Amino acid sequence: MTPPAVRQASCAMVAEAVAAGSSQVKACAVVGLSARTVQRWQKNVGHVDGRSTRVQQPPNKLTELEHRRMLAIASSPEYGELAPSQIVPRLADQGIYIASESSFYRLFRACGLVRHRHANRPRKARSKPRALHATAPNQLYSWDITYLPTRTIGSHFYLYLFLDLFSRKVVGWQIYDDESSDLAAELMRDICQREAIQPAQVVLHSDNGASMKGATMLATLQSLGVIPSFSRPAVSNDNPYSESMFKTLKYRPGYPAKAFDSLAAARAWVAGFVHWYNNEHRHSAIQFVTPAQRHEGLDGPILLARVNTYRKAKTRHPERWSGAIRNWDRVAIVHLNPEQVLAEQARPRSTRQQRKPAA
Figure 1: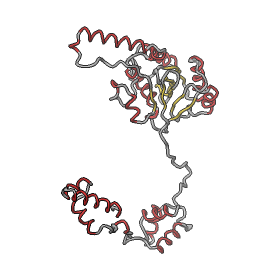
Figure 2 (figure 1 turned 45 degrees about the horizontal axis):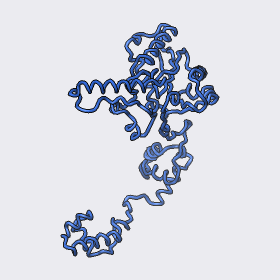
Figure 3 (figure 1 turned 135 degrees about the vertical axis):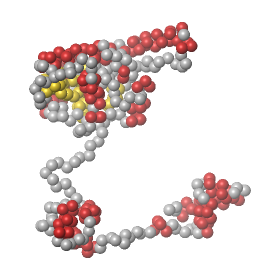
Figure 4 (figure 1 turned 30 degrees about the vertical axis):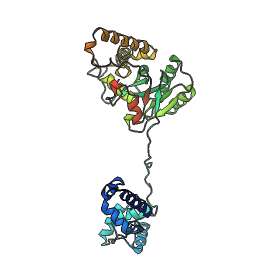
């Protein structure tokens, strides 16, 4: 449906090229048209494409009288509270057919009659959480609660765990036999005191659990100056670091094959795991330094020493290297829920094939 002005311009360009000695076929190819199309346009340059003015009228369209009858039925006391999926079969039982369910719905939408009328809340559109990032420790935390099995069937211990996303250090944890907003608030207050957190310094990301959005927890965050951030309901990908952390914990060699005997036993095992994770585990997402080293700012000198070691090794045996030495660049920024392009650019070369954050 090319406008007449565009047709005239195209024909003029082709005619100019032909006058200059070019073949019509090649000139038409340059403007992206076939020679047959240009020839047809040249016969009727000012002709308007009939498709642009065509008004298509379905032959089986319902009449205005049928529309009024459908609306009268839908607003009657007998059918006023029923959906089209209920109205059409009931009319059929009386030997009446006016239109299909989709036709009823189409008419209702056109008249603004489709409304949420159930007792439950209408479904809301959920947007992805805003992109966050950290360039130093104690800027961006993530936390969640996971179950730990007990000897009693149907009963669990609850592990509360707070993670610094920049350093991957576990900055706080505790196990309780109850899931409570009050307990989470108490643990967060202790973390802020130990880490010397200042107001508006930390963003705390979590899911939409009752403990995360409880009144006591939100009031505590406000008093501490901690900025809350929440993921979409039932979307674990919005809080990937905590989910990955729990998988690392539960797939760690030595994780009890059977349930924990007591709360003290669970706390003792998790204490050993956190010590190993923070102080011994070389984390792949932060260039294989420990979370404690990165949290204290020691990862820069460590990575620089590795670069020097590799350079010396390459100097001694250059034939063993076909290219540059291994990339030991420090990870300068960590993103949470970034846009896809930004995530690919920010991810280190050695870990760009990983889709979930390592733990």
